[in-house]
Length: 403
Image (cartoon, rainbow, N blue to C red; front, side, top):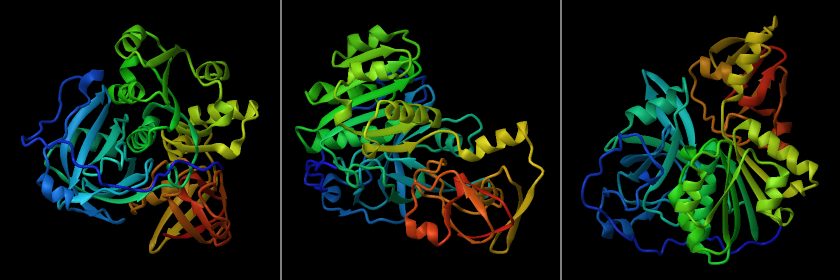
């Protein structure tokens, strides 16, 4: 893999502004312009923030200092430490919220959408999911002044562990969040990063970070930004407002990609989005004989467990197996994932991508047999030791797990 511009962490940049007034959460129906352009009210003085220590990996208490709508169903939160801290993480990584919802301990991971080049706060962007316990709890109940506990940062889908000279970012839906962090990092810390960014969305109103992305594209001649919209209503408004932004109609195809990024074969590709989008992009690039050693992915979307439940409803399995974890036992069908059983037993587990990519739900099979659809986040030694990814593993016998 080609060497990259230096991405070593340097936090010498001064805090540009601190607004002394309390920030009120946005409650109106959003438009693209709602992304704030100023820093939020801080928990500490600028002097204290500049003297703060770097965030050490692990559990930390955060306070929400700002909340706003990105789109009609996406909300962003800005957090700062209860004591001054500079957030040191790799662009593209995620944090995990430790929550108590209706008496149940729940863990859920979300990508950091801000950049470590702006280290005095963290921004997390969350899409409301129909029936989603955690996403609805956070977007509807978490407000400015509320405190949360998070762990992290985690994730190998980042610009530090995967280096390149020329980037191609392909995203859809909320898959734009790690790409936004990566883009902001590159634009803030280097002057010649070569970025081609193609984001797919249903409509103009579903585009996240539109102002921020357009600002980066207008600042740098090396940042090429394009959108692919399934419905092109108001497309002209987008391109009129942001002259540096291109826009195509339909869905991403090889023909469209070649038109927008002619040199895509010479780039390192980062892909993030719902599983169907991910699968389509991978097949498209493989068919074009792209060097898949330069292909990197992170998956956002419905969990594999949800997909397995849907399959179960349409084609019920008659096989029943017992999943044992410590002193708890859960009976599952052969069509359900280990993650189904762990969550139904109300045991804490970190499940980030929920599709066999990130590796957050790694656990060890002590006895019994399983079948896995994904092992990409596991090392050969871990596989040999019996580790599996709970979200993409089903039982073929009674199983005992060690968390």
